[in-house]
Length: 119
Image (cartoon, rainbow, N blue to C red; front, side):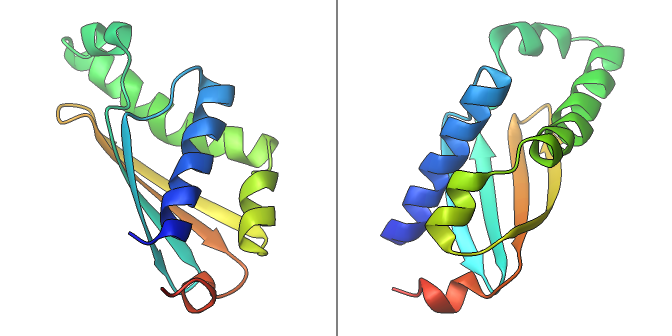
C-alpha cells in the first residue's frame, strides 16, 4: 500500500466514523484502474457482535452493513475522497463476512486512479 492508498484508507475510516459512529479498525486499500478496493477488519461494534450470535441477527447485520452503507454514500457524497483523488465517485460495492468481521468495499470512480497514484 503506497502513501496515497494509505491516505485514502484514512479518508474512508473518517467518513465511516462520521456517518456510522464507528470506522473499521484496519483498512488496506489497493488502487486498480478506476477502483479503490478496501479490505476492512474490525468493522463490528461490541453490540453488533452480540447481535451476531443469533442467525437472524447475522442476516440483519449483513443487510445493514451492505445496503445501508451504500445508501449512506448515495446520500452523502464522499467529497473529501473525490477531492483527494481528483475523480468523481460513481458507485460503491460492499460485502461483509459477519463471522470473520471482515468486509470489502470497492469504490468506483470516473477515471483511472491507479495510473495517477502509481508509486
